[in-house]
Length: 485
Ligand SMILES: [Zn+2]
Image (cartoon, rainbow, N blue to C red; front, side, top):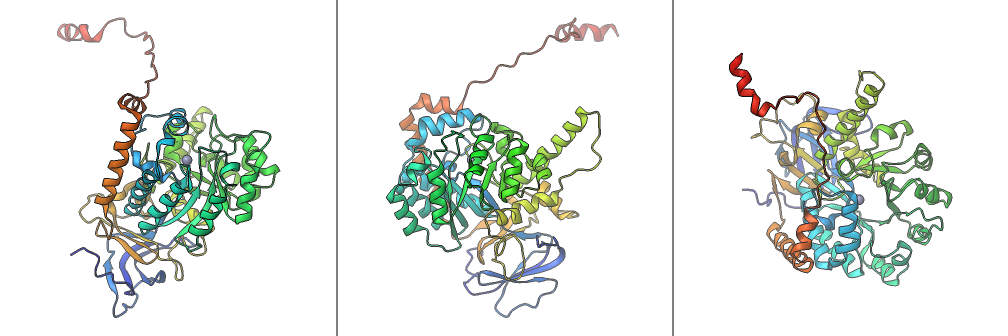
């Protein structure tokens, strides 16, 4: 029986006997330990906790219990086009969404994408997502975005954006203000930010939008250091006008000078690294290897499922790989050998949990498993999987061995939303119908030719070099040569 009825509201939940990654300040890892949840809070963490009379016990033996993961930048609306842009560059993405087809998206299409992305996040143990929602071309689109987020029991931050208008224009609209008043009610399941990019125009046309953010008391998140789009000038202008704050999240920050990193570090902001994105799209090299020299806090993000995956296991894995690749690459160029890896599995697990909580100003109640914190909890356990044992290095196991199919149980705000590998109380079939309707609508609106061209961009030419060793053709001569041996 797995309908979730045993998890009646009010019953404490005891995750029994797992390896607990507390992600507390001391990064304590507790073997064979329990996590007790009551209401929306973690109430105790430790070995052999007494079992409350009415508790539901979840056997975490052989598994890893960790805080829910936090994604600080995902364009959830784009999940309705999952995988479509797998072979895009950043320029092709801009043309498709910003110039040509982004305008086609109706409120119901935003709803479809957000709903699917929200469900996908929970399934992968991502309990908080910043919805970097830059397809909100009308307030009706924004209503649809919020309706979708409210329909799936995760924790979200709506980062409101609109790529169809300059930020100074849409933030000044009375209906935008009215929307914020009506829909952003201050409960901790739905936060709010403004999401826009700074072009580097010396007239700094984004200034009024920053002033609106300041007036509303909300953070700004911005794609920074994006090759060919936003640059050091964007950072310098934000700094000179006094809009760089500890709450600012700089997404990518992958092609910036040391001067920009100094400005970010000095004003206390954080960088959301989306390695899978940066490696493929071309914003710049994933910056973790560079920014550790500046002491800038890091969180992780997936950016968009129109290209890539939507789980933070992949973010952790690719971030470790990119950082270490760069270290080896730089060392080899100097004839040196890296003897000790700078970035550890423990660091990326921290960035995927605590790092996200800090970036969102939620370190007080999210990001670690400690008494009094909100109960956003993930159990990684898959007894049927040959990858589930031996469990020797828990951080390494999370970063390099585990994947979304191993997410056994997920709690958000004390509520069990996934158990025994199945989502509870989620109508996936209904969301599938919504997404199918969106795809059908977009495909017919674009026309078959544009649809197909969008998915299959031209292939760059590869010139095969002349090879000095091909004085004989192995394909015709190989058999003759062999016979003469
Ligand atoms: Zn992005």
